[in-house]
Image (cartoon, one colour):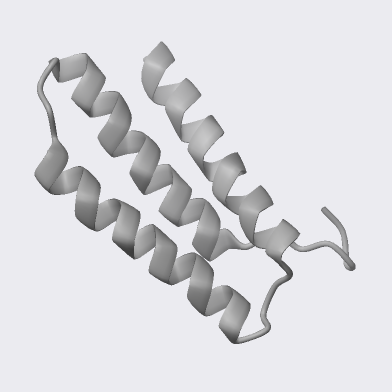
Length: 79
């Protein structure tokens, strides 16, 4: 992460939201399908909009998404 490679914070937020829904679904042992479907659609819309606006490259968007997903999933799994 530097001046030439900027991760997408919007994508990181979308990844974090998806991780939160998935971890809560596993922890509560209940299917959260009605929450999971809109979150996946919103995440797709966010990542697509960052690419269509030429704000980020595909690598920056995916890196941000996975970084937000992994950090949130790890923190919610630990605590």
